[in-house]
Image (cartoon, rainbow, N blue to C red; front, side, top):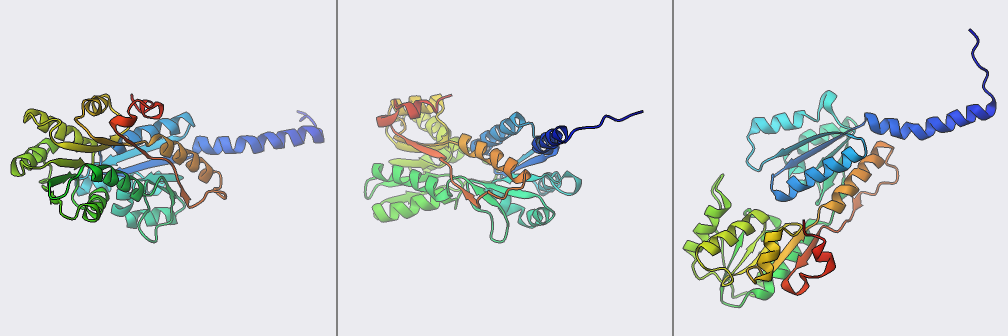
Length: 313
């Protein structure tokens, strides 16, 4: 058997083809992980977008999303999906997962996995790339949207996870702009539905004139609770959630909601997969922080704007 003798030109061509194919082959073999904690509407939507973007790029994806009250054994199973032989080339997490699994993530990154944290920084000492507007941007948006509808010496309420950043920022802004306002809060019991929390709030504080709901789930529950008590439009509402659902658009147009902070994870998720590919291919030019646009404030005044209408499903 005689092997063909290749000319220098053909050898150079084959070498160039190998160089071009190498990143493609690397991507085909690379694993990308997604690990989120606190399973609300935003992170469910973000996980779906990440999976779609990764699949479009022919990446192998493993995705785990834990609810806020996930049992310890569920947490252990989730993190094991990304350790040992299951370790991905890049792992994408949200701030809550980074905080919960700090020690495990430290071990994973020491073993070579690159870490991307969406929409917020990771705990100190955890090597990572941060993608997304710092949380303060979103928190400020909701707080300053809520502040103008509040009147001095009136009762107002904040609905959401006790102690979360949006709640803290709202309290900080209100103390500055309306120091005489009376802030009411009702802490949710473990596993208590949002509507139950809303009904307790409205029953305990019937004079509440304005409410800031820091999640989409609480916004929807608040609208339902107010409707049942024939108080829609009588209580000022600012809500927060993913994009612009049709029911929220209708509520704004009917003056049932004064303002809405629309979270926009699409750009952040696309940038996360783009960054993951760059990290797989060496990542020499990847900056430690990548800023994206993650939210837009909406009122009746700008409801018909093209940029707002593009957020509708």
